[in-house]
Amino acid sequence: MMPKPVQPDLAFMRPKLSRWIALGFGSGLSPKAPGTCGTLFAWAAWLLLAQWMSPDQILLLCIPGFAIGVWACGQTGKAMGVADHGSIVWDEVIAFWLVLSLFPGGLLWQLCAFGLFRFFDIVKPPPIRYFDARIKNGFGVMFDDLLAAGYAILALLLWRALA
Image (cartoon, rainbow, N blue to C red):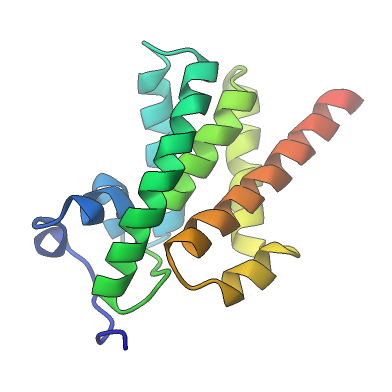
């Protein structure tokens, strides 16, 4: 049985590494649009990582990042009493790193990638909504955003092919 839902703050994050990760190092604490704030954090972190790593290296970093996210989001969801609380944003971080690593282009491509990823993450077209509604654990939290990233990547591929 899940505990009563918790509204996270810095005090909630402080004692556990899993909470720092799941809440995007604080970016998920935003009272408005935490998923968008988490994605903006992901973008800034990706740009910082890109100073020392290639897009391919960041892409490879998404593999352990996903596995760590399954653990961190699962633990944090249990502690919060909500499997996929809006403040849990590590799923946005890893999914958006995936998109940016495959489409690292200039600012216009990155803005379009941001908009498309946020659109698909919010709208949750099939089968995203199906999995989001049925898998209520750390894997489910991470997986639906991976699907949203897939939709964004397909849209960017189509745009690039038509341009």
